[in-house]
Image (cartoon, rainbow, N blue to C red; front, top):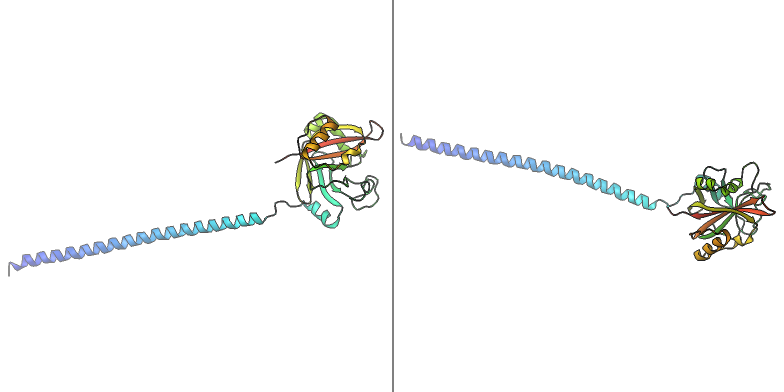
Length: 247
């Protein structure tokens, strides 16, 4: 029996060791599983966050794609909706020129002494030549009176001074469909010239026409000419030539 005690003790030690090993393995497995679940949870959270950001990005892109590329300025939108004669708006920064542009395609002198609603008014309106189209490329002529009180197109004559011209480069025209950025090229006075009414669309023809009139090279397929009275000669006119600036 004495010989059996060491054997029994050895067996007991082995059993305890096996049990301990099993407990250690179970604890390790439990720890590993817990760690794995933690990693899984973190991955899930990150994936969810990424999915949410991706969804937000897609929604933003969709929203941007549906956004109109051009929005009418509010003051022009109100006029366009209520007045079919209104075709745009002209603004020259740091001048008094900030007016709606009207057009009567049947009578080019209709707005000479009428306001934008067609009511008699000596100062008239700022108006586009009846043969031209604001939305098309080419030549556009816009007229306005040279009023002594500084309104309408009085400031156009000031562009005869090159320093003034160089300090007033920001000119914008809003139409029903687009905003057109312009910069002045040259300004001169001369006799009233009906040839400016010609609807010129070809770039080569337009550049040749303007070079013949001004002696200045004007490289553009879209030109606006603002015309007002000049008192330097009988029936004289002041011509401000502006070209579109691509942005």
